[in-house]
Length: 383
Ligand code: PMP
Ligand code: GLN
Image (tube, rainbow, N blue to C red; front, side, top):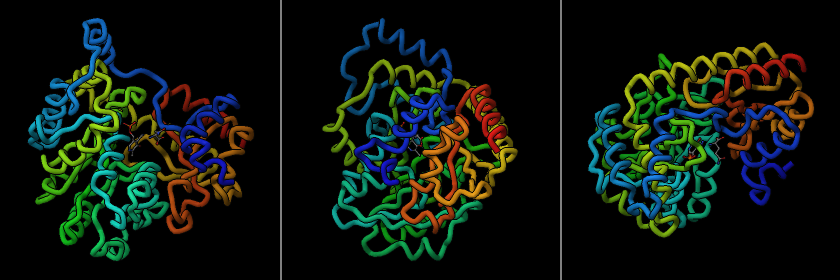
């Protein structure tokens, strides 16, 4: 049973994609699109490669991408950033998370986070010698339990690590929820790390609110972004950290010795994407909301208990109506049984029962319509 979560076997995402390849199942497991994003982004990178932009970038990022990130944060959120000191380009949001946690969490420090959580949070906090204090977001409404959250803080709290829109629940945190979290962080003088990689995938009427836009929060908040989710370039691994200069400098202290810098021509491609018109971003959001609806309706038709996500790439569906009690076991059987791969949501939890995730599966909808339709047909035929 532990074989699908054991780090030696690869992360849950790598394992499930391997299972899909081996079995020929439709892969709604690992969250990556199966089609290309905007031509501008790809063409800019290709021109950069052919135009001689093939050497190390400046360690903090190319001037083009730093300026584009600053303009993007200004345009969408009214956040003013100094490109030279308040932005750091990283190797995906994954390195943003790793470098931030490794540089700001000391042995014995406590990190408050919600569960289910993105897998690398727990791995990095453990590597840093920190202790995670998790608060469940309970299926199916994922409400913030204010008393439990307050109780998770202590005088050892160094960091609050959160994610909105949230993987895997699809929850988009409201301004009120963020204000409550921010107030607790401020009271305990904790740094907030807010993973906003799905920032352009909050579906109407839900709106993405960056933590750094709340009163008083910019000075203690590091925000993580990624080009992968917005431009269908998950394999490019271009991400970033933004925040106050002193914190960004500390994160750079770790980052400069992990990778130094990342993919010069790819940075230029992502920079061109961030400069695209509002219509592109609106279109992306609307298009993804339609795919979400197709997958959510299909899973419901196949007998799952479905929660329609407010944002992100994934639908959570409870397989309990099919007699499932153990999502990890079910994830191993589903490819043979139905020809579909999904990720067990229980692996993102310390206590799957506490968040009601024991029999819940995560299905990705960042896929072509034909891929989603095929998966739905197979599931409906099976059940
Ligand atoms: N944070 C969350 C919540 C994610 O879902 C992902 C990957 N999908 C990442 C971070 C990692 O992003 P990147 O691929 O840019 O490293
Ligand atoms: N973020 C992607 C997901 O949640 C996976 C990224 C990875 O494979 N590390 O599916």
